[in-house]
Amino acid sequence: MRKKAAITSIMVGLLLFVVWKYSARRVSDLILPQPADVFTVLMEGFIDGYFYPHIMTTLTEIFIGLLIGTVLGIGAGIIIGESAFLRNVFSPYIVISQAIPKIALAPLFMLWFGYGMTSKVVITALVCFFPLLEATASAMRQVNNEQLALFKLMHASRLQTLWHLKIPGGLPSILQGLRVAVILALVGAIVGEFIGANQGLGALITASQSMMDTTLMFAVLIILALIGFLLYGLVNLLEWKLLHLKKGEEKH
Image (cartoon, rainbow, N blue to C red):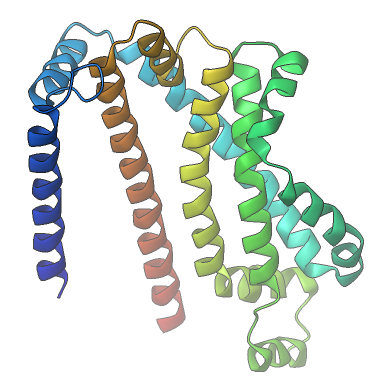
């Protein structure tokens, strides 16, 4: 089944490439550049090192923001998930904060933190924070009642129950939140660079727009797609390793 799905996925990709190639023949390069021109710009940009500083800037913003958002989101999710009182107190504010588009706060963060990397990291951390908060808080409440009763019977402390039962049991939900956060981290960093930056892939897209260089814009979009795909794959790898480790511990 997986092999069939993989072959079908490749065929769909080839079909999209063919549609792109023949559609580009019918319109101006300013609207839709030829695939060959885009890949030429990609190759030249990597060979002469033009893309590397921009890629490193964006990746740095993503990883720092994702790290901060993950630590704070999981930590806050555990606290809220463990305390019904805090959950009732903060739930309205969480709902309100979710209703506000985080990207709309980007100009405000630029004023507060300047146009350097700090503002982009803050935006990235913020967009990562809420999916992980929601996923972790939900995971803490989805514990198996029979296992919880067993832990109480064994007089396990609250910390022991949390560490050995609730977090391992909620790991799939937490990792699902991380999977969402990874993609949002890329979006947050790029949007921050759109608003104000002189380096980074988002800044490069803005520059290509001002120069009306659609070919360069497509090349950067392909780089962003590859980064998103790799980040998503890393989370899947992390999930596989953690769940594999968990199964090994359960057998012992």
